[in-house]
Image 1: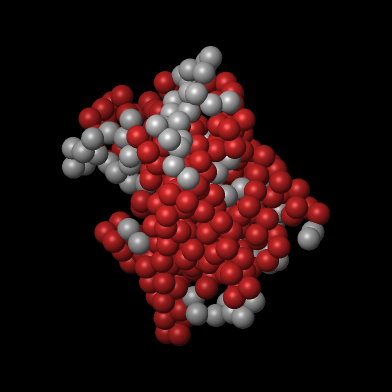
Image 2: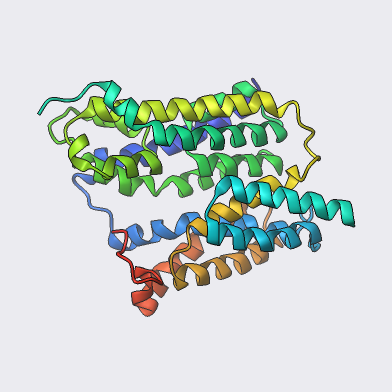
Length: 105
Length: 238
């Protein structure tokens, strides 16, 4: 195992552990402020958006360049995921369309 | 009342196992494509055990191992555990703190939802919950390692594999949408992330976008008010 990956995983494990146990240790005496509680609800959505959208407009080197195949493949996946809410279905559909686009142009 | 044996929890975990095995396999496959070894993949599923953040870490590792953004993003996306964990702690008032800590280490969205579907079942019954959560955790690790071994057989550029992670993120994102406010926040996060990525190094745009968008969400929910209850007028989640 590579040492840098090991420590990265360990670090991820420690911070995740903290999010799981801290209420028991802290919150019994100190209630979480309401605004922070509300903000927590929007974090996953914000992180996922900020991962998804740049995939369509930046290339692998981080330069601005429209990524036509990912962009076109994303539309049906957005729609499918929204309607059907299936993880595997979305992944397989996305892969199929992306693969198909590669065969066409 | 008696604490039912660990076995009862294990049986009740079966629906979660059915969900975790395939998603774990998907994680193992994709992590392997990103260059992680089966041992590293198994370790991550053992120590982190949080699906979305593991997929996101793989995506970020693909762009280069950059410590702070990966760890901060993991922390932020898992902060939602705070709410579940504090709810769970109310059900174990008669037990020592270390039992609660042990139970909390295996807390996930799915096992929490399962436990909360019948709170009477878990109230002061740590062995039951341990069976439920431990079995789910084991399924996640098993799936990841299986996926990691299969992952070697597949060429990373074939059959649309480069789009597997993006499609997964799109689906995870759409699962978060319950009302108009959520949709507007997605739009704003999209614009902000494009803007920040154009001048910030590495993965910092993710961290910055997440903090600003969540703040905007809190400010906007006052104005958009009722939309928080969902487009269908359903019951709020808190």
